[in-house]
Length: 476
Image (cartoon, rainbow, N blue to C red; front, side, top):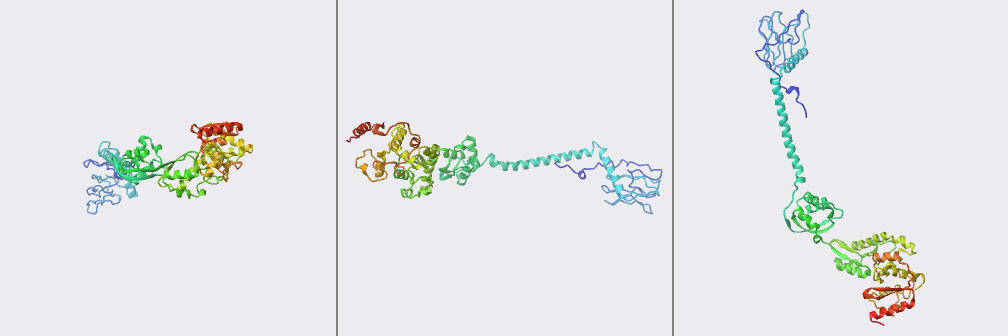
């Protein structure tokens, strides 16, 4: 806030009828400092100063006529006889009296101007209730008025700036038509609001952000494609984004233990992606573990969401990525080494456990049977490996089936098959890495309908269990 300069002050004007203060001449002809200007010439009438003019000394000519001060003229030394009367100041002028002695040096213009300023200052200070106070009141009024106007201008401008935040534009109602909006992963409420505003769903991003903040649901927004309407109120758009039915997404669910060929067919059917596109995906592009020889065993059983613009390679890559997460959780590579297996062999064991197990308690026991038979140099004789080699899905394994030529035929070949025979889930992977303790070397699922499996370390018991299975299946 700046002050008012002295030049803007209204000087106090003395009463025109009041004579100016007179100074007494000094013994050497000098005069008082406050009355040096405005002397008349010898025998002439007093000089008259123009109102508002700068101080100037009056000088009479030879005829005795008065000299008139020109406006804004510089001061000159006054010259009068010692017996001449003093000059009277007009309103707005300074009164001076006396003249210097003949042997005194005349006063300069600067000195006279200084004395004149002192007279004016004294006149202002001597008046407490006159025009000086009125001037102060007037200046104060102008200041207050200026501040009020500034506040009004600032208030209007500030409101214009804050209005989009305080009362952002918003539509009314539930909108019309249909528009699909994609919410990118990692989007916050502001990003979502901008996407909706760009698509014409809401009137402004801020109105949507306000709606999410009022309901504290910003953390519930999910990426994906959504079917919305144009011209929606922000609250209505938020409701639709939170409704699962508004999201354009397909879900693919892979159950535990599916073969690769079965998994791809199911993925195609549920996602709408062409089977040929899924079969043509290069395994090198989906992020397989370094120990994997192909996709079999590494499409992790789970439920996946498929967006409208997802490609076949993207979906398969997400399944392989999910396997990697499970493997890290189970410390698959470290635990495989402790079991004297490669990571691929551990996954292969898990795939056989997955194909053979019935109830949850059976998983680690079947893994133990496999390890015990490997340890004793016995062929595994796992029925599911023979069926996998032939692409068959049934429970009846004939003598002929057990004689097929295939690296997956564990009846004719000792050791593990060359790779997984299914896509195992977490229970099977855990069982392969943490087998049960026991000396069992045989197991038979005697009652497949009720998922009953029996374990034994005696071949005679195994024969009886096998006969029980045949009776339940209606075969000899």
